[in-house]
Length: 152
Image (cartoon, rainbow, N blue to C red; front, side, top):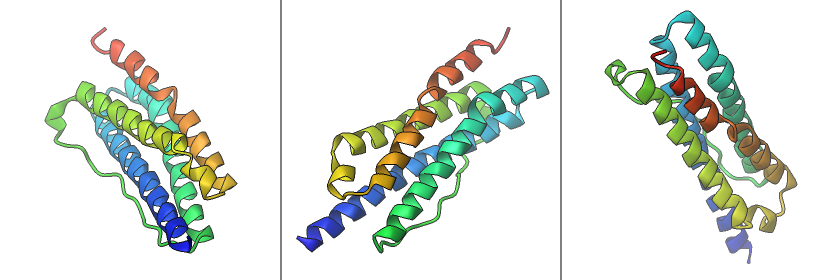
């Protein structure tokens, strides 16, 4: 039984890491978009998307590290990775970020729906996942609103 619990914790940690990797991809894409924008639009992108995403990314990392430490698991570090060449354009970078946020949210939703966080009995993990998902929830709509404003 202990092996099954340990494996369940490892699987859970891997799922959280997958979501964090997606959030890192989103942050990198928004950073690339920011570099191509005028000052007013860049400030809007930072306020509406980048800062809330950065908060969610940090909270997800703390949730991951805390869970690993509480259960004697090996954690890992995360790094936002750049999605691509500047020729892709702002619109594509923002769409990439929005898609990555949606993917991260889906991974976390599936994890929560699996009841695995309840089975391993870690209230701090459950609270962290819920907080990250709450932070992510408005971001795809905000990205769509920002994209609607381009070219006007």
